[in-house]
Structure formats: structure tokens, C-alpha cells
Length: 432
Image (tube, rainbow, N blue to C red; front, side):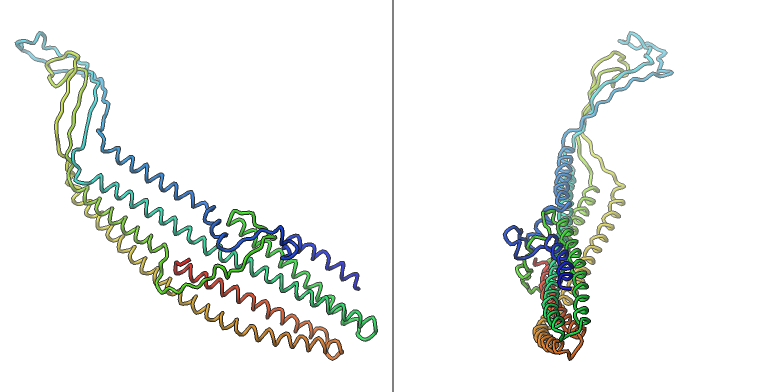
């Protein structure tokens, strides 16, 4: 039976060493990582990082395009026409050799337009573009901030999975030691073989649980490696959360979403000002030069150069009505953003209350865990002696030993949960 036990334990231990790693045997070759470095790598390697550069590039190109609109606008105009009839003069004109006008006309020229004064329209447009870039950039910052919560939860899942494995290994070790003791009693005829069989079955079941726990741990580690785009595996040493779980008590939410709301309001204000500028006229100069016929003197049908220049004002009076409606819509949008900001602050403050109470609860649970574990250890020792003396069945001892390991697991998980709750509180308030 002992040889059978050793053979059944060996594959499990080998699997644990290969997949989950041993904190001692791999100490010299294991990498080390903590939560802060995971968050840093996840944010650094996140696909949204390139989005910020795209936003900046689009903003720069839009501003260059806006600046180019202030340059003189040159247009090349060319045309050739044929008319079915032309003006005929039935009388002679002094100085005109022929009063027969040709039916074909040609013109090739350049038109120039230059805005002299736009009453601040272009400057306000560029200010609006800059506000749009600021808003989009902050939106990207908000999206990246959400990555923190994902990494915190994933990192905590890895720690919980590893703690579960450690507790199961300790439970298995206790069972194996007890198995050896009972084996000697069976050999001496003091204890029945059935007692030994019960322990053997429990050891086999625990090994199965270790296999399941190991693969669960491996899955969590691989997901974390995917999030961070780093070389993390099950041999990596994960530092405790205590290094990152520094409680920062803040009654005021300072999340990046609040900056985003402010940027969105600034953007809407800029758009309102732009719509107001569009109501005003444009003062401009223009000119045109061409070669062809007829020119501005239609009596001269020779191919020649001709041109015109002037100054004008353009005022679309329809904009006084349509742009006012646009301003009203933008003002409504501004009120909606302010309402969203108030709703966000309400939700975050509600979440902070829940998280603060969760931390208080976990602190009290941790205080009770110590006394529970002490009592459980005493009970296990008593049941072990009673089993050795044949007073109780091995199943009763196994149940108490399992309860002890569950209590130790709960205590370890409560510690991790408290640290996670502290970090989540800081993330919710915006201090981490």
C-alpha cells in the first residue's frame, strides 16, 4: 500500500513542480513581479496607447488644415464654349472694323480670394479643435484607467489560486504523515485496514483537487501574462499586495472621468462660441486674371489678357437663425454632461461607502480568523489522538482536518480580499 501511495503521489508532485512552481526549489531562477509593475506594463502595452498618438496626429493635421485656410485661395478656371447664336449689330460702330461676333469663346485664368477679416471665426475654430483633442485624449486616459481594476482583480485571482494550492499541499502533507502512522498500526495489528483505506482515498481525492487547482492557477497566470504582454509564468514569484494596498482616505472623488467631463464642457463652450462667430460676416478681397475672349469688353473679340480685382463682404443672414438653433442644442448637451458628472459622482460616492464597509467587515473577520484557527488546531490534535486510539473513525478526523485547512484558506483569502478592497477603494476614489 505504501508503494502504491508513493507512485500515485509522484505524478501529482511532478505536475505541480512543472506547472505551478515551488517557492523554494526555484528561488534562484524565478522572476519576481508585483501589482504595480503589472499595472504599469498593462497600461504601457495596451492597444489604446497608440490611440493617444492618433488623436494627437489628427489634431495637428486639423490645425494645419485650418491655418492653410487663411492663405489666399487660388482657383484655376478654364472653359471653351460654342454658342448657337450671338449678338448682331445692324449698324456700324466707329472704330470697330467688324460687328460680327464669333460663336466660339475661350478663357483660361486664375481666381484669387483672400479673407481680410473673419471676426475671430478661424481663431475660434482652432480653439475648438484643441478642445476636441483635449477631450479625446482624456477619454483615452479614462479608458486606460479602467485597465487598473482589471489587473488588480486578475492579480488577486492569481494570489488566491496559489494560496489554495498551498493549503491543499499542507492538507496533503498532513494526510500522508497520518497515513504513515496508521500504516505502522495496521502492520502491528492495532488498526483495521479500512482505516488506512479511508486515508488513502482522501489522499487521492486531494491530489485530484491539486490538479484542478493547479490548472486553475495556470489559467489565471496566463491571462495576466496576456493582459500585461510580459513573460509571466507559473514559476514567477508574485509579491504580496501589501506593497500596493496603502489606504488613502478620501471623501472627494478625484477620478480622471471628472477631468473628462470638464474637457467635454470646455469643448461644448468652444463650439457654442464658434457657432456665434459663424453668424458674423466675412470681409475679403478677390481678383481674377485670364487669357481668352471675350474679355470684359465684349466688343473686342481678340484673344488677350484681362482681369478684375475688388473688395467685398459676405454675410449669410440665414445663419442668424440656424446657428442660434445649433447653439441651443449645444447648450442642452452641456447640461446633459453636467448631469452625467453629478450622476457619476453620486455612483462613485455610493461605491466608496460600500467598499469602506467591506474593508471594515474584512478587518473584523480577520480578527476572528486567528482564534478560529487556534481552536481548529486543538480540535484536530484531539481527534488525531482519538483516531489513533480507535475511539473515532478516520472520517471524523479527516473532516476536522479539512475544516482546519478551510479555516486557514479563509484567513489567507480574507487577507488578500482586504488588500484588494483597499486598492479598489483607492482606484474608485482616484488616488491610485
